Image 1 (spheres, rainbow, N blue to C red):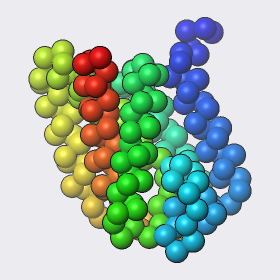
Image 2: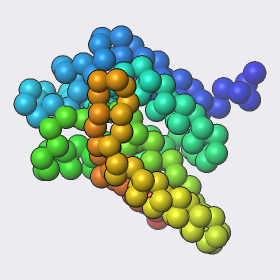
Image 3: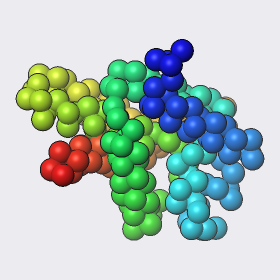
Image 4: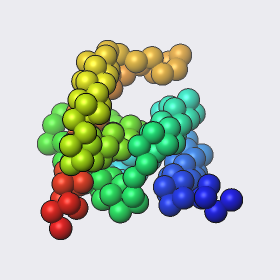
Length: 178
């Protein structure tokens, strides 16, 4: 049983529980979502942990578990990457014309960013190229509008995904330099 409860699984469970509890406050709770028209400073953190609806929450949490399974990482790297991603995504939202934001997907991209950085440092360039190609193809396909439920359609904030991905790479290189 101890092998199943790795630090990454414990961190994932914590994120899932917090996201689920925040979801219970209401779908895309306007008090917790980043909302330029009704802005509160805590929205800079809470917006990353709430979701439009239950389907959005489940998809993000499954992606978290799958990505950590595919690309195991150290909690120090993961938490550092999440922090840098939150800062960069929030700066982007504050400096751009983003009106509303919810979801964990920008932070999810820290994980493949860490993997890419790890492959580059290990000189496994074929794997690095594969992750880069998958990322670029996915980014091109994500520019389309997504219908997440019967009444909500939005355009994915691709910039958040890119900033999350870059955060993972940057964190790994910073840790390696220390």
